[in-house]
Image (cartoon, rainbow, N blue to C red; front, side, top):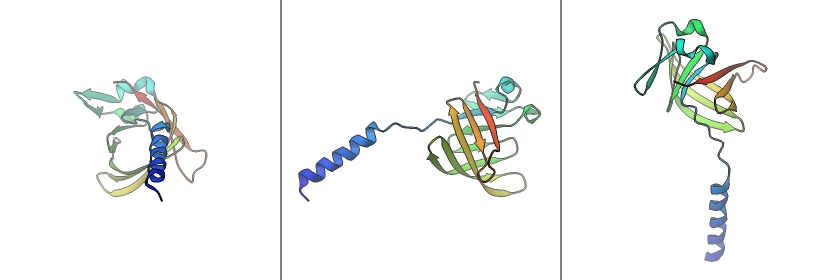
Length: 134
């Protein structure tokens, strides 16, 4: 194959990568099933977000910071992330006070500040979460 042909094909591939829309969403932040009561669920200390002592009585919630997901009772490290259209699949290694486990965490992106957790294999079961502005 001639050098100019290889260079042309490489240029076309790079251009297509640069012009492809990026669907990645930044999931960092605090997420709650009821965005109206997030002040009762989370507290910001400097740059860090944490749970208030009785946050679980106000609904479900989680915090994503970089490659970690935290719930009230579990801390997880994201091992892999795969996007499939509007759905993001995360595989996380999670630890609670009593056990370690791998968890599939799948989110349907509804908009920049609203996601719905879906449970593969359990069609119709979803939980919506709003991003909380702290």
